[in-house]
Length: 216
Image (cartoon, rainbow, N blue to C red; front, side, top):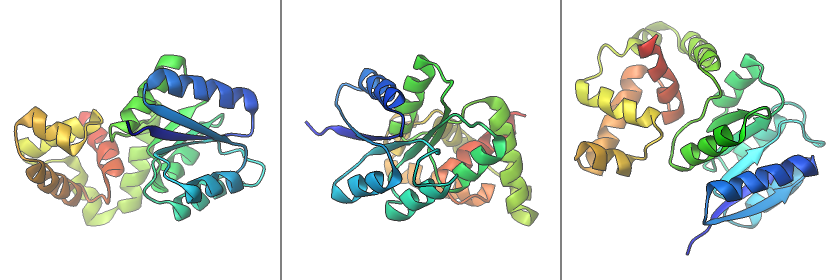
């Protein structure tokens, strides 16, 4: 059996233990690694396959988002969930701009944390609250601006594309969406590409966040 390998990067032993227990409670097929600084996290990434990184932003050898940037540079395809005591909207926004798959305040409860872990594993994106979603979407819209920003209303999305976008927001993978809508996985990929183009965004993370503007 192939194990789901999770790296917990935090310099506080008690919180590392708590996260390890939550990860093990969320998944049956998991192997958890621990480290206390960015240098050790990078070493772990280089030494073998890591499927998910749970990263604290306050690390002894990193300032602010520097540690996240170094991890993204070293392994841009590895999903990262920020686990931080800081929930400043600007920090959340910048984290998502750097490509994180989730942002968990350390005040999050057990069930919320397990839900976030399961959502990200399935290919989804976890944002901690509707208020932060609104903030992130607003800034992303402003950053994109111009003609691309104007397409974010979703008016040009077809009914099928809207259905695919709704399932993306639920954290479904392309394969799961194909099963749900009874269409081919290649067709799903084509719809996702069209959604990204029409919303004027670059990836699934931004598409999921942009999708919330259709509900406001």
